[in-house]
Each structure stands twice: as C-alpha cells, then as structure tokens.
Length: 89
Figure 1 (tube, one colour):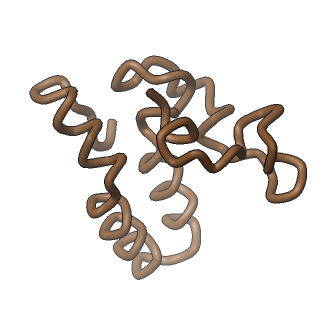
Figure 2 (cartoon, one colour):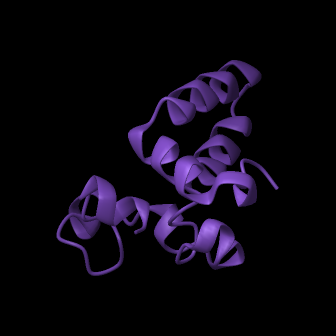
C-alpha cells in the first residue's frame, strides 16, 4: 500500500483531489520507485517531504523529520519492512 492509498488523500494522478490541491510529489517521483516496495515514492514519502523542507531551512527539515517519524503510515512501513527499511538513502 502506498501513502496516498493509506491516507486516502486522493492527490495521486487522476485522484479526486489532484486538480484542486495538486498532485502529490511522492506519487510521481519515479527516481524512488521501488524503495520500500512502493510505487514511485509511495512508501518513501518522507524522503520527498524532508527534501522539500531541506531547501528552505534546517529548522524546517527538523520539523519535517519529526512530523514524518510520528506519522502512522511511516510507522506502518517501518514495521512491515523491518531490517530492509530505508529511512534516507
């Protein structure tokens, strides 16, 4: 399961909220396809979020990391992947 399926945000391409809210970058980031067995960055969405915030400031990056590691989807992927889990590659 990918983040947009788990969170039901509907921001993947052709999703109900994609036109109104924009397409989520995790759903189209094909360079990260397959990481943690997701489609594009679907099971590695925190990498996209942290990378985006890193461009703004160190404080934003730290805030993004804290938000992501407390996320129910992050916790689910980490538990499912166990030793194969990729936090940041």
